[in-house]
Amino acid sequence: MNYKQVIKHFLPYSVINFIKKEQDRSPRINYNIGLSAGKQPKVFFSYVNGFLTTEDLTRCHGTRDVECALFLSALVKQGCRVDLARYDCEKGIRNDYDYVIGQGEAFRKASAINPKAKRILYLTENPPAYSLKKEEERIAYFEERHHKKVGVARSGKFFRDEDFENLDLWIFIGNPSDSEKIPDIRTYTIRPSGIINPLFDVKSRDYKTAKSRFMWIGSYGAVHKGLDILFDVFHRHPELQLYVLGFNEKDRRMLKGMLPSNAIDFGYLNITGKKFARLASECGFVILPSCSERLATSVITGMNHGLIPIVAKETGIQAPVGEVLSDYKVDSIDDAITRWSDMDVSRLSEMSEQTIKFARDTYSIEKYSQRISEIVGSVIR
Image 1 (cartoon, rainbow, N blue to C red):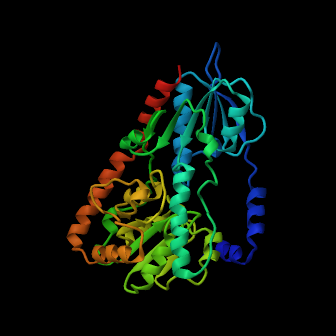
Image 2: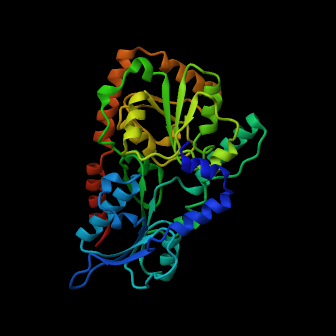
Image 3: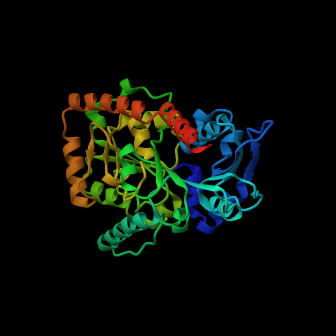
């Protein structure tokens, strides 16, 4: 752990949350983006807005800033006047919008204030009922193995059932085939992008050592994302290594004492920095046995760097190589990592090249930009 993680480790979690809130001084809403003369469609868009003060979008820590910027750009190109709010905005929302688009508390409040506006949900997670069912399965499995109770970390915390009521349409992160699963509502799917580290050199990877190293890239909700299961699996395999990126402090405390000696906790890393480029070149696989994702951008980011995906089907990842796990149980994942770590080095190298090409062709910023422009052009009249 770095010095910031060490300090966090000894602070009460309530103090950590307070510090985060105090450090966050960014405006909750930005008005009149794209304003011009004449009549314009008036749009309230709630997602993120920190990128408006960022000089270089390629240096962002996640994909949502870039994707939000492209979404906003598509709205402006369609002739809209846009008020862009953070998802948690509660004040300053106007009552004259033609369209309310987005997510979060801001989306709910704008919908209530603008009952005549067209209501468009931007869904970046699975619906709460589905996610809750899956997460409760993982919580029960965790308690079965470790005799310790944990709470729901992610499901229903951001999206709520009320978000899906009286929608005109929704846009959601997913594969094109996913649209067939949603009945009785106008649906648009869009694939997300992943981050590409400009410092990464695929030629620096040596699969003789990389095939024994697996990378988990996550955020809060370790049980939701299957990290506890991986800890149990890697306890069995001291000859292998698990690189853990994005381990949340609350989860770190919850899983205290469970981290195996061959799992390295790197905390939060800048994905575009030198350290991630080095770590990605040292690993052979990105692994994510998550119980519910719309389409896991952390896995896409790993694939962008040639990491072969080993994932639960709930991640939504469709790739020409790698493995979709048969289930989330310890024995099944144990079998998978054992097979992959024993695979021929030349074959793994070939699959790594296939992975990079597929990921960068399928989940690219360019593809996202093209698709969101198509959607906005169809939606805004």
